[in-house]
Image (tube, rainbow, N blue to C red):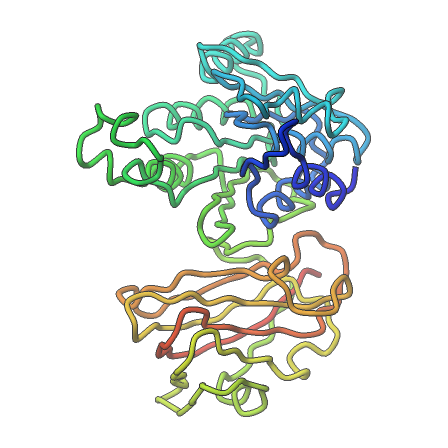
Length: 380
């Protein structure tokens, strides 16, 4: 089933009483998960933490679209009145879903799976994709990352949600649910800690990226073969592009269309952008784009003030006519970081989609930013 159709079925679902419950991840994250399963030829997928089951159905729809496969989803409970079996029936995705409800949880399930896959003392990998959106606690999910790392085949993607979530204030009943936590545990972003200290340092994983403004973390298990698909996301590690063309920010600024409320002046080799309003933007000159298949944008910026700002980059290719949120990426900037090198993948596959326009927004404002480098690149 196509992404737009499965997402529509999920987003318009109502209970028998006409109630709508908020259970969907952002469209950007959902589409990324769908595209990853579809284009990376995943067949055996696992979801750790079923929740309402919406993401399970997204994965199942991608499997159906590519011709078969199964997503096993595990949780300690089934939600009511909206749960995995209800949504699987509503979307027609039940044939592609293996839903497991067990109080032992997904770590026990993976332990049993590792035991079954172990031959002569070595675990033989059997999974092609993993989405982890479960306990959101350091001990539980640090172990989950270690276990699923043994089960994923080389080249497979692992996605973790809620890197920006902490216990204090992150749950409506956090004072009761996490009453046993220390102050440090309450104020720690547990999933981000796991992603940075466990997954990014794991010797079996080699490519990492952040999506949805830093909410989701992506990691690919090492493989000699390049991935046929990459997330449209802020990439943490250097891009391996076939070509790259750099432009001077001062030249771009002189030719760019920009809204009111932006003042520009040179500052050494950089330009200083003073944004007096909220959400001013540049549309870069057509000479940058020139109808080419652009797969990545890199730039170097330094936020001077305020303490934080959000840079949003939009692009239009052959699949869209206007700038919109689905083809954009937000990057959080902090003044204390100083100069920041940013790499954005704007094309998740190696299909040739000519980019027709690029736009940069400072979404929070007012703010002052230094801009010292800009380049585009693509795959050969």
